[in-house]
Image (cartoon, helix red, strand yellow):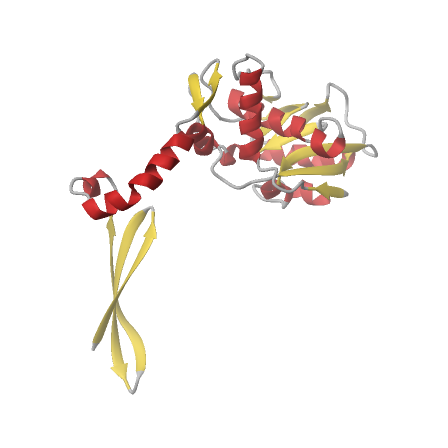
Length: 256
């Protein structure tokens, strides 16, 4: 009998021992044993000196980037449904960024709450903070959609009890049904073209946003990642002598 051991890494180390029986060069799994090894500070008690020395210059370079202060948050901002200050801010950034494609802001900005992975604390904002908030390589996509498709999009958002939106107002029920919707304070016209600034992940219909697949036109400028767009916004506010801020505005309201 021959024993082979494999290790897989996913947040914690999963060590799996597979026992094979050999018969004329053929193998058959006869037993599986597994266990989780937490990857935490225990492993730092006695660090490998040689490895630490090897990594030191790279760590110093990375720290100089990640700890660089790029702006100041006027108040702490978190993300939650149906509406939150941080999701409002990021949706606003997307809607404004559509000017790169349209020459003007989009009618609507949309970001998924699940894609915002941390809150923004009051005070100094570092590059590392922005990476913690937006760790994915999601990119801007600007979609052109008929009003009828927009109504389906609003139903998608209502079913999830809210997402990060900009430029629209929704009233939804507690069981996820759309009750009322408007764009820039006006009723949605079925045959009119509207523009939506979102991320490629949602434009592909993920997170329940299947209505975005009904877009008549889709433009995704190269290199326009959401993280970089947010970084530029923070740096722009700083250059203008302003702090980063956002507030609740009743963009998505849940009613009984």
